Length: 105
Image (tube, one colour):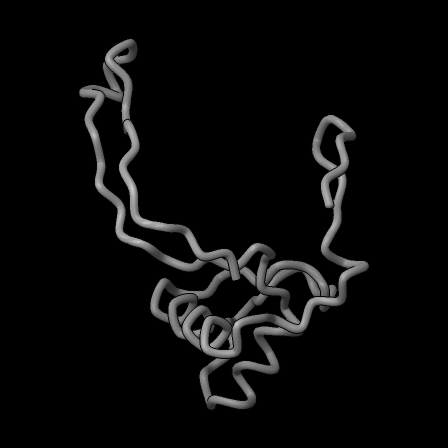
């Protein structure tokens, strides 16, 4: 989990009508997973907690990100992950290649 401290940031833009007005937003501290929750991880979570699986959790590959879960379901798995302070993602699967071929760790 990445812990994000409280702070402020500018949201919006005065350049574009659909983004107006630019304004300051005060954000509370929060934690966010550094990596997507995979289908396999969500299935383990669902089995352990009795939460239902989505009708179609994704394209079928266990290491693909889970999709079609509700905001409350996402919140529940997030709280479990925060409590565990980690997800079981092997280090080798934490990297990737961006749309322009750029790599990141």
